[in-house]
Length: 125
Image 1 (cartoon, one colour):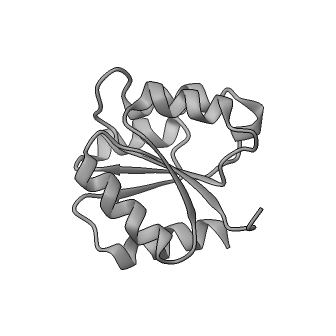
Image 2 (cartoon, rainbow, N blue to C red; image 1 turned 90 degrees about the vertical axis):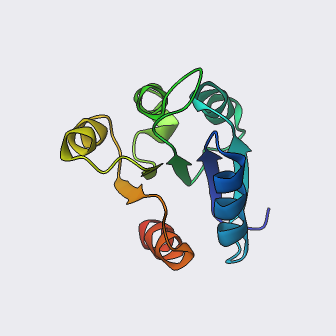
Image 3 (tube, rainbow, N blue to C red; image 1 turned 60 degrees about the vertical axis):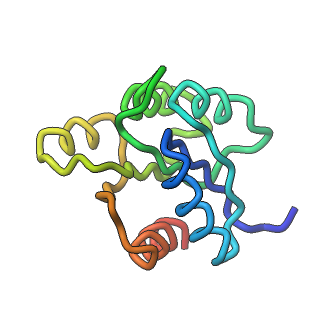
């Protein structure tokens, strides 16, 4: 085991997933990917060790980000895991629902790679 923080990216846009992964791998994070909330939830449940942080989109097919987070928060291993919502939505109403669902932070797309690294690093270290 490398000891690097393990991050799960849950995002239906391939381009966004690639950008986020490239940004985080460049600063030595271990990154796994899921294409929607259903896949993200399954990966979280099946992972041999809990992820250190989860980055998720809000609007996705099959299961949206909020529903996935509500389900992940029910898993004891993920009760305190930082979860970052990565979305184009910036409305206060969405944010309050997000925080009630257990979101730790909100990053609006498009974002600067440095802002992502700073946010994730700040939550993990």
